[in-house]
Amino acid sequence: LAGNEHGDPIHQLEYRISRIEGVLRLNKIITQSGGKIFATNGRRADFDGTVEKCKEAGGSIATPKSPGENDAILYFVKYFNSYAYLGIKQSLIPGRFQLLNGAQLSYTNWYPNEPSGQGEE
Image 1: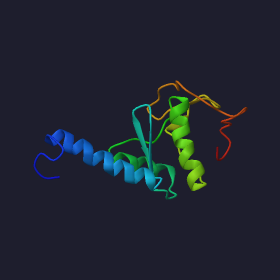
Image 2: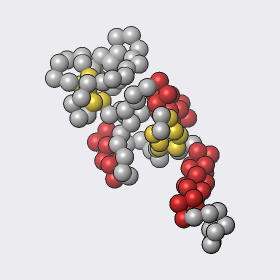
Image 3: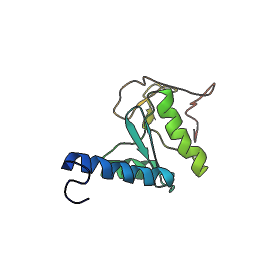
Image 4: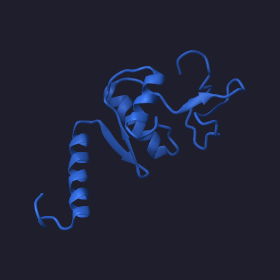
């Protein structure tokens, strides 16, 4: 974008970002909810590798805090017919779970008797 075709530099950047986000949405690798952007490369990885890649990208592993955010993650699970890691771990109390930083969960949407802490969830 040259000159003032689309206004000042801030508006030019916003325009370019919105176009990039549109392309990523079309390719099914980005979605939004609650002001957050959820993204994936669609590849399988282990939990630690996923956490590290998220940090390298300037983000963090997904931790749903609302039904909309949960649906954003579920979108990828369904589209890629795969699982998703979440930023949740078992606490020192068996059967209880917490955020990776140790904070309590503020939102859960578990199936009955899950998570069980037994094997893959």
